[in-house]
Length: 432
Image 1: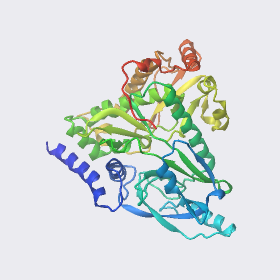
Image 2: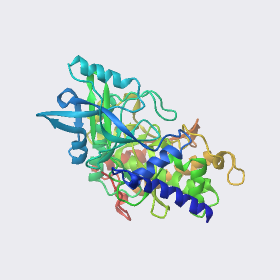
Image 3: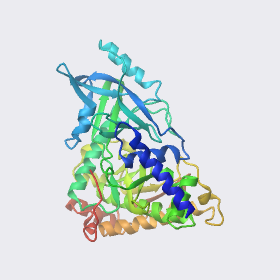
Image 4: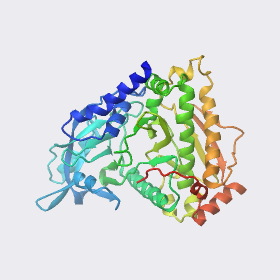
């Protein structure tokens, strides 16, 4: 009972501090920010707000890629008009000491002011992105931009315009697939509906929406937080489990397998860096796992060439990073602990699990992946390996798209019914 009270107290702090601010940030996102920055072995960071600085750049000087479905509040936050000229607010990562100087010089070469302005309030995440809040409209979204300082193992990172264009194209593709196929039952997808770029600098900003999570009343636990020594244990104990490893095996590892199987069948894609920074675990109002996983960052993926040819989207194959195009097989991997420090209850605690438990998680992951893929498509995939292989903290397998099962799956894709099996017994999950 004590452990349950401790968890509830933590969640209470994470979801009520927001109300003390003069601007609006949703309870769901504030709790997520708190967990990302404080319950994270990768990097402990500040969960408080900062005033975000930005440059004002005439809109006709930047590249822009904006989906028709974009929330109008996001547009009015990023783009404003003054004296008949439209400007974009080009945000500066508060930790950056390098990349924004290029933008300042770009403005000066065009005879424009490089004065820094303030408008948004921002909150750190565990990586380089910031959750930003419009103090007037209350609109909130994530911004990913270049910075030479960030959290954890991800350091100097330029957000390029080429990468931003790929993100926008693939996100629109995912949105199209969601509309065409049965409702999702394991997965919540986060949209990235806007990107702005300065082509000559190869710099960009990418806007990610968290609208699918707002007003749900649920909690969204970052994958790294679930693997955090104390927080991961407290959630397990609060749910009546004495073994955190077994709890998260059932409530993170296996649900993630189901979500990625659904994602592969939906899109013909798999993550090339499936570490815990890319995933959120949904808990209900009583902090019980719902079984749904939130996926973000679709630009970080392998594409199955046959799938995109089957849906007549070879245009995407042409612009994608060629090393991330896979033909003849479906690469699938999982790296829940990649880039992270293993909690004792996975790696060392002999009373709960053995030192080989992470490999056991891998075996359970792929068994669940294949089971869910069959449920979604009716297809039993053929592994091209004797068993999933571990490479560092990633565990990998490959499934043939050349054998009878693989060819049958591609035929279903051509017919527009790759997830036909998902029509039975589905429960809707949010997506775009």
